[in-house]
Length: 140
Figure 1 (cartoon, helix red, strand yellow):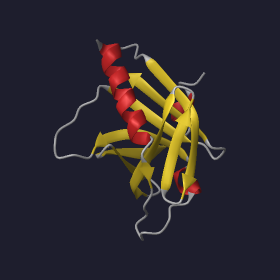
Figure 2 (cartoon, rainbow, N blue to C red):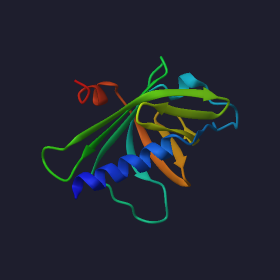
Figure 3 (cartoon, rainbow, N blue to C red):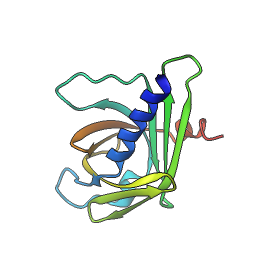
Figure 4 (tube, rainbow, N blue to C red):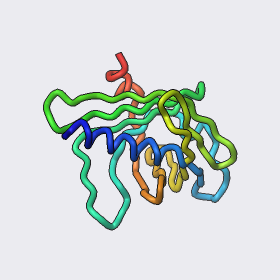
């Protein structure tokens, strides 16, 4: 059951990530370099209370590589799912694609040095910037 819940969550996140549009505070175009780095899922930004038992990281590499890591938090061992693909930016839209990853575009509604909000399928998801080492420990 927990594997199916984790896969369901990862599918939602992947679809959301593939619907990226970018906006900065001054309504200017977001530069690709602004989003490069590792981000940890923080919360859903909805009026409803949403709960996810686990952790999720996304990483936008300066070389166009995209990595998503989901850790199932239902047990102490925490099953880890890793998705790899590519990302590219065109204007204020980010497109993520790759082997086993459906091509998706996502809207960026907030991007600061520390905070990122992505809207996918109308669901805003907040991320906090973290050190690259936080995701790298799951990639070995």
